[in-house]
Image (cartoon, rainbow, N blue to C red; front, top):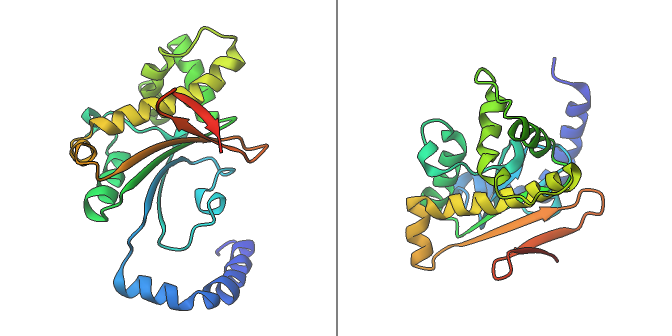
Length: 207
């Protein structure tokens, strides 16, 4: 049986949101999607880009993974899910804006920090294999106390993911032609405040 609480929430959604936007949903079903943004976000249940940005159906293509990591393009066969989602968004849906969105108190970042610090990666764990991608970012963070270092890693990882994005051939050529934009953002869950990456200063500034 399907969870009863989800059944009830679905009925509420269908009788309210869906009926109010019925024409939009029918149009999207018939004509397809044309999102304005692709957001690389964390799987964390506390962070929902569609809710945060109050997006309409069809407006955002959201790809979520542990710690909102964008792998290097040369990992195309090993971590192809995220790379394929980005390629689909850019080359098939022709999305012009990419946002890497991290957040505070990220469990993936915290665990990845511990693995990097102790070099305790488990080759038999898919989580460990994925968080191994944080090594380049870990090597860039300042020598602070552990809590501050983890907070630093949350933002440094976003910068590294952007660097990785810029090396993807299908993104690089569009950047060179000034056809797409890339953004970095980080949200503090407790305060709800978003900070965006200023590329000139390499500092995250609050909106």
